Length: 185
Image 1 (tube, rainbow, N blue to C red):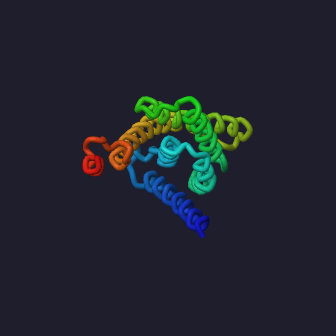
Image 2 (spheres, rainbow, N blue to C red):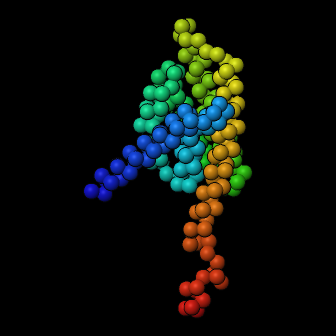
Image 3 (cartoon, rainbow, N blue to C red):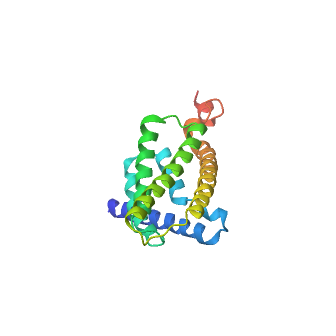
């Protein structure tokens, strides 16, 4: 029974992340609709949890994302999965300190790796398929906006959740200001 509830929770999480991403793409005006909610949330999950199971949630989400993308099928999924695998390894093995600089660097590296791997995959597809045309100035403009806006939103999201979780985490409560400690000592 517990595994059924966990599966339902994972399905609801995937659907809610996908709906949030599609809403950002469709509702916000031009430069702000390039904020990549999927990458922000999965990088945040990797930073706070560091568990390998988080990466499995990307597969159904990437498949749903491919239904709304005008590029060849699998291009966005491959770039997203490659980015999250690389960022997971970097955050678990190299960037183990969770300072604000490392979080900002992780956000910048994550979106940069995602977009440049996307462009490399797009170049490979464009090399073999002459019928597929690409507007390169438009793509580079969109990449610039996405890198700047996604990094900024990711950093602000991390700051706000860090303040919120720091207040609720009992290990940050000072020993001198706790009522229970003063009463029983």
